[in-house]
Amino acid sequence: MRLSISLSLLQLLTAAAYAQSSDAVLSGTVTDPGGAVIPKAKILAENARTGVRAETFSNETGTFVFPALQPGMYRVTGEAEGFKKLVYNDVALEVGARLSLSVRLEVGAVAESIEVRAEG
Image (cartoon, rainbow, N blue to C red; front, side, top):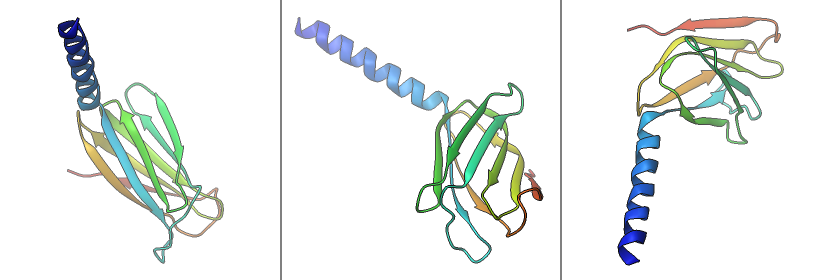
């Protein structure tokens, strides 16, 4: 009985470790040009190959997190009322990666947007 419980626990821990290492984490902080945090900003991450989209919002400290994204190339968009939309193209997430983005939104109309391309 004790051996059975130990083996079951070992299998569970192994599966959890594998699941964590096969995904990527994307997090960051949303700020205005003066460095003040922006709560409730909408952040969208879209996998360029699959089209799968994940959405979250920045919290009261301006931070956001996508804890389990599939590896791949992403288009990440940040927007908030009274600010221009910011688009990061070609954000590469590898297996087990933990990437942090600084999302600095410019003051302006929501219809305006700024696009940023990742290089190298």
